[in-house]
Length: 268
Image (cartoon, rainbow, N blue to C red; front, side, top):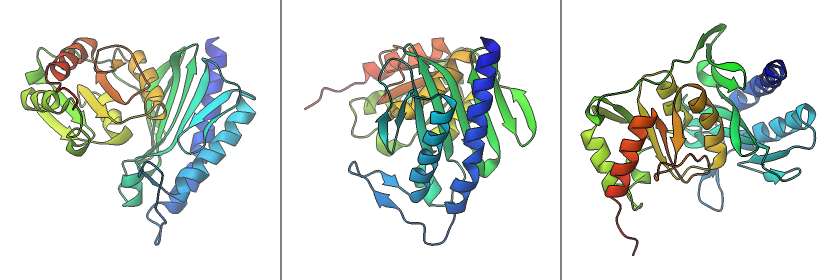
């Protein structure tokens, strides 16, 4: 089982790395075309080209299996096992030449996130995990294991990352979020998968997000579970469906979830 999962991870790792030149061809390219989707989120030709390439690769690696991607929706047979693709997580950053974007690929088996791979082409970094394969952090040709989550004594000792204040203001959790930020040792807006990279390396103790989708979260749920962390919704229930999420050490996540709920305002 472990050897087959290792081979599967190696195959999808190679497929994602093969997408690097595709994405980098558009990154910082003069005249990059940025369009708006129906939900007003941005999309570029790189998003569509990378997802199309990864879909073809997955159809070879796992023929007939369902794929859920940000740009082209769901394909293949439906069930509780499927792949997720976020071709350019951080399209806004990508479109402005910032290096914090990544290519995300995940796998759900029988309702559980089991495989996660996040590649950061602009900084030559990949993190990944699969059943029987220790979560790794590869920079260039050097690979290290990702550290286990550390427990913090209180929120006042914790470093908190989040996606940015603008995403919280219209939510019922804005007041709770302000309380969490105020109580923490340090809070910073490291958006998209880049913040999770540094949290999984141990530089931050929790990441809070609002407005996220399954393709943003499935790889992170697999990486969290493999490193002693949890990824939950604001009720504290394990979830990779969004639109809300907290990732961190279980004790800290429970504390943050209580504060967020405690500051919740009623919807008009």
